[in-house]
Amino acid sequence: MVILIVVGLLVGGGGVALLAGLRSGDSSGKASHPTPVSTVSPTPSPGATRPPQPDLAEFYSQQLDWSACEDQFECAKLTVPIDYKDPSAGSIELALLKVPAAKPDERLGSLVVNPGGPGAPGTDYAASAGTAFRQPLLDHFDIVGFDPRGTGDSDPIDCVSDQQLDTFLAADPVPDTPAETNELVSGLADFYQGCVDNSDALIGHITTVEAARDMDVLRAALGESTLTYLGASYGTKLGATYADLFPDKAGRLVLDGAVDVSLNSRELGLGQAAGFERALRAYVQNCVDETGGCFLGDSVEAGLTRITQFLDDVDRRPLPTGDDRMLEVGNAFYGIVLPLYARDYWFLLSQALTQAFDGDGSTLMQLSDLYASRNSDGSYDNNSSEAIYAINCLDDPYAITPAQVPAQLPAYEKASPTFGDVFAWGLVGCEGIQVKATEKDPVITAAGAPPIVVVGTTRDPATPYEWAVALADQLESGVLVTRDGDGHTGYNSGNSCVDQAVEGYLIDGTVPQDGLKC
Image (tube, rainbow, N blue to C red; front, side, top):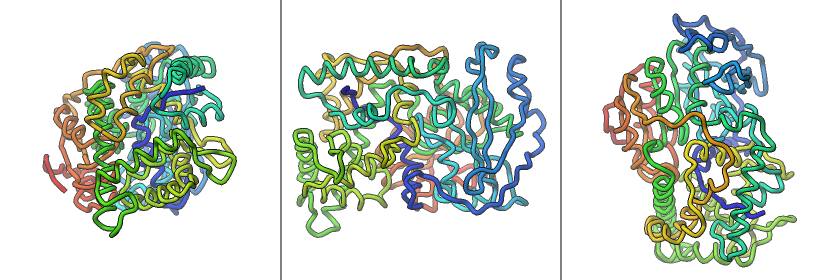
């Protein structure tokens, strides 16, 4: 089966937790936290459990049964309706993980976090709190992560087998022949049919809007009158949607690595193509400027040409990896883009490419596997590589046919001479989706919400800086904070100005100056 590779927000959003795992030396993205377990739930704030409509009362009045789980964390299940338009039609349980505040006497409440995706497990993000967040937040908040509906351990949707997913990730992102194109179309149809066949009734109810409604039930179950939230990458769309649906329940929200929620799929693809090109050029420029004899060439253009030629070579002749797997062009692509999410890991990309140029694809394969949460035994830690398709295509089912791709290529190749064709073919990605959403994306303004801090990084590959500027402008109470730097997201990325702005708002309620440049 040949299935098109689509670079969605998963790379960035999932990358937040994945790179946190790299920092801790654990590819699972989980880090231990020495906080002692305390399973006492706080007394709900006044009005916290009041439902927005009477038929949701049983969900809003539930109490969480926290119990000790791995590494001194606490885990619980949250019950939410499958269909908010018909709450009596069944329910599911969402997986929760909490890292208790390190200083209980100075605890301010719960900070709900989401790493993005869509599809990345929020429980993994919370479990990596010791590396993903700085001590001031760890001291003052219970860090609470949840696996959004249809992901992680929250009734995960299942579309293909692990072996098929291997093929999915290895596939050529740019079909070269009519046969590959035909396989692409039939493969996508099989993929989406598999989502329906292998999953339950939830498959049609995993939209961002429904996940945002779940967050309000979570807020009530945590006993909070308003939601305190930090979302990264796609998690910014989730947070902005929440603020639009529940402006009176929105508390202090920080949206880091922002998504422009006004864009359609084509516009998002063009933005990401430009973002990855910008990040790759920065990486190559650094190699040319600082290494004194860059292995990629003596100029940025030479380096980009070398990488393009390498991908073409791998497409024709996959590389050995030291085991029974071969590095296919899809794996090589993911292996190249993942280290672009943090400047600290550019050295991994240099190491991987140097080895690959010598015929060894092992490190690039490891990076590709890290992106996909693939274990060495061939299993996957989670369903994020499947959920991203199902959620994105419910939110926006727009797709073009392969015959329409050539007309898109000029614009995409202008945005990214290196990766433009990959993103143009990505527009085929929702072809064959089998279900339609019952909850549509709203036009988001979050009218009536308190200040919402939006963080953008100037050379962010996955969520280009322009998206943060746009989102802050679209939100009636948006406050823009700019980080001048490389990599995906701005908080806890070595910029004290951004860190102080985020922590000052979440902890003290100090609203940063709109337009703050760090």
